[in-house]
Image 1 (tube, rainbow, N blue to C red):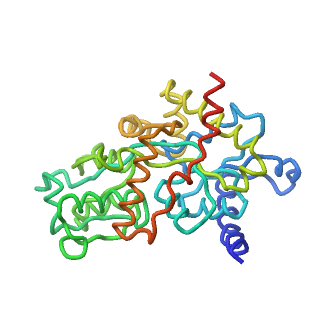
Image 2 (cartoon, rainbow, N blue to C red):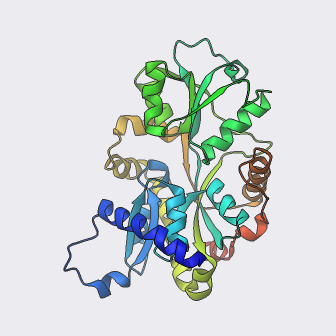
Image 3 (cartoon, rainbow, N blue to C red):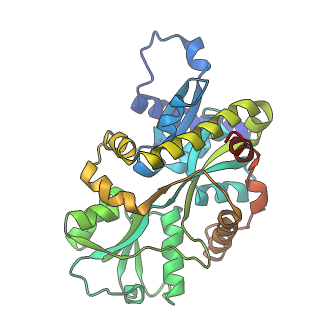
Length: 322
């Protein structure tokens, strides 16, 4: 029954994603399409790497853009995607529910910032007490915001007003005076600075806990079992594409600009984005710390076995090619 639920939930998601991606004419050969490797990601500079897999994959790659990491995970579990990018918060939440996902490579680090009005009297995180702060629940940025407040002794129930606002509406809400601060991912913090209405209060990266981890590429346990060669090809492509984009900033930002974000803004936000593929002991420990924070903050009921979430064998094989 759970699989049927995932299938039903994923159908509308994948159909919508296919329309956004331009999946071809009705007469396109369905057999050829079925042979494609299908990867889900977002249309952002920090999650762009899968759009370059085709340059390194022996298989044809179809990339489907999503706007919600939870929708990607649902499509993955239903078998409509072979791999997808998702936040570590989403991966941890899935694992805490017993969903069979595995992290096989990292995707991006950093990307977050806490923003206030440029003329605001808020000069430190402690000054957020009594303020209105925008957030999107269940996201990496939500976890970081709650961690910021906790570290500054600010009670989320009594000391601040948390307002649920979509990321792309947060800037206008700040301009309108509807909120005093927001914590989101790029390019929205950099946009607030570029357009002159906001300033960065802090970058919420805590070396003693979560660090700069953000998102990763995940597959299902069944995919690893039934299609290990394909997973290896995907991880190899991810490693190679990441290296290429880190060495060629123009190629990275030019492609990112095709998604509708001004390149000048991308140039600013790129300094707060790290494209990555490696997963080391620090990354895993920070993921463990994030899971503990999520449990303490009430975002999950139980902390899953963090070591079991990772399958690093594909990264290890990718490294042997060098």
